[in-house]
Image (cartoon, rainbow, N blue to C red; front, side, top):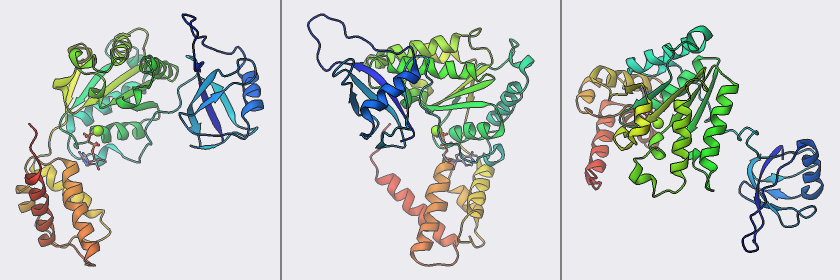
Length: 348
Ligand SMILES: Nc1ncnc2c1ncn2[C@@H]1O[C@H](COP(=O)(O)OP(=O)(O)O)[C@@H](O)[C@H]1O
Ligand SMILES: [Mg+2]
């Protein structure tokens, strides 16, 4: 195992009103020696409990980050104790090689991201009161919100922390708020930097829904604190994304100075999307009549065009061992996809 992060959680039992101690260390190196001396040889997975057998017998630590997943502790494993100061184990999404030019359409969002990239590169601008602070990407799913964040992260050399809102929900009360604070602590340390919170509706629900999930309330107030922290968070820009802005709590919504809509592609963009993904196909598309297909796919998202038409057509061609893809095959895929959509129960 390369590294292990342990969260002190306490004893399995408690005597009466005695509060559970929360252990910490003053010397991380010493703690590492101590931990290795008792746990070397153990195979650990994320979520496992490790029990202390020396100073505080049966005190439990939970493995919150194990790298590689499920491996054996050795005398070289880097073991650390989770504390407010330790940076959270990486929660950033894998960066895929996507550039602004790969995002078709969404001109307004692309321009805003280019503006942000320029601000990040100029500290005078970034520290002025004119800097972008909190921006919300919204619009129907599958039209490039996440993709744009990945492009932004590839197009600047500055730190972009990409997190999915659901990853901020912890198991224990307080986990979520702590993750938010750590996330912004890291962003400040790395400033100029950008925090991208994907699918924020997973946590930023309207008040009456928040109560369903106990500690979300705490998480939301931590987030509101960070979004408000104009002075504290100098040099940090936040972008959040949502498919459903109407379910967001108004307190959260109000923190965003700008709402940028990601629209469904128009005729011209649908054609561009289809042609672009067709051009990357291992099986050639043969003289396709894209114009008529574009007419039949009003209201389709970029993702649907890519997955339901291009990907399906390629799969059918592979299945039937065709050496090229024809307009006819695409019509079949389109028809099949509409039949499936019609057969599905309709949720309004
Ligand atoms: N504007 C676009 N141009 C090209 N491809 C797109 C576009 N929008 C979406 N896609 C394709 O659909 C996939 C899903 O899009 P995504 O960015 O995750 O949507 P969202 O976050 O808005 O729900 C992307 O990975 C990409 O392959
Ligand atoms: Mg997304």
